[in-house]
Structure formats: C-alpha cells, structure tokens
Length: 300
Image (cartoon, rainbow, N blue to C red):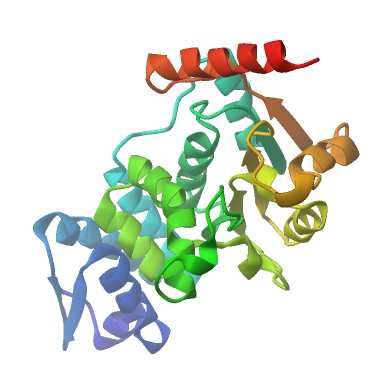
C-alpha cells in the first residue's frame, strides 16, 4: 500500500506503535512500514479488513484529524464483530423480549429465573454488540466461587486452577456468541475479563459492561460490593436463580436482598423469567415443573 510520506506511516502506526499492536493482537495483521510503503501481513480475510481500516484512517489523517488509540481500537472491534457466530441476539419468548429491551435501555438490570431462560446468554450477546459498537471499552464477566456441594480446597492445582471450573459457564456463554479465536484474542488483550467475584473488590469500573452470573450465591455484603463498582458510562447486569442458592448455613441471598432494597428505583430494572421462557431442551421445562410441583407437595 502506497503512502504519501513516512509521516503518514508514523501516524498510522500510532503512538509507541500502539495502533500496529492492536491490529496484530485483535486482527492478526502485522503492519510493516518501508519508506512510503506500508505492507500488511496476515490471513487474507484479516488483511482485507485491515486495508479498509487503513484507508479509513488515512482519510482522517489527510483531513487533519487526530486518531486517538481508543478510537482506532473501536474501529477494529467494529470490524471483528462481523465475525461473530450470530448477528444481534433475538428474543424467543415475551419474557426474553422484556429482558432484552431492558438490557439495551437501562443502566442496571437484574434477571431472575430458572436455568435455561437465557439470562447469561442474552446479557453476553448484548454486551458483545455494545462492545463492537464502541459504546463500552471492556466486558467483564464474574461469578462468586461458591461450592455447590463440593469442596474447593480439595481440588488439585493452584487457586486459578480451582476457580476455573466455576468460571467455565461464562466461557461457554462467550463461545455461543463469538468464534473461539476471537474470544481468545479478546481475553488475551483484556477486552474481555473473566474472573471470580472476589477480584472485583476495590475497583471502579468505567466504560465497561459488567455481568455478575449466579447472583443468588452472593451475600448481601458481596452484592453491595459488586453494585458499587459501577463507574462512569458502565452497565451492570446481575443474573441468578433464587431457587438454586448454594450459600452455606441458610444465609440470606444477596440477590433476594437486593430486590427487596432496590425494586422501584429509577434506572434499575428487575426482570422475572419463568419456566415458559426456558429455551433449552424441551425436557428442561418438564424437569423444572416436576421439581416445583414436588416442592409444593412437600410443603406443610
């Protein structure tokens, strides 16, 4: 690709070659400046996309505009969003439609319902959309590492190895939306962060779409800690099933406590999904119904 000057090449590479590193890390394309020439190396599809981005950047440069690294990064995310496995996520039930509407409009959303209702999947889908559109700079997925009848301490490996099984469902949700190579690059470059809830303490999260999964397994103090991480231009989503709490000793669920305290506050939406919103295998609806009926029969 021909450039008008070495100065154009310098500006395209970005401060400290930051633009070039972003292209390499997120699009797998290497920029090689040689005098007034710019060579692009990488997979054919990625090089074609990178060329369109370079032409866009050159138009801005030749118009006398400055390209900030965040803006350049947004252009790359916009390009790679076209490689998502699916387009925009769509609702399959009226309950999911209410939930999606809230995810796209409200600053804080709580989704409460049984397994299979798409609570986490839809939140991740909207987050990836917003990330690609440049509305947020980062997606953070977190979960409390609470043991569902098992002992974390007896699992082999270091702490990270022990918590990875708890985070696996979040990676699975990402895998439903993004191609694995893209998801891996996002994680490696800190565009997407997947971590235990304990890692949230002491942080202020700006320009981020933040999802707390399995919110029923937080204590009220943990839930308060999480909700107060919200920074400028951030969205918080909490998902959970209040019938599946794994907290020890009958402790109060932070999700139940949050609804009691926060319901009715403007800007905070609580969406309740039911068995009619289950979109997994048809047997899942029947299983949920059978357990609900069994609990009613056992109640005094």
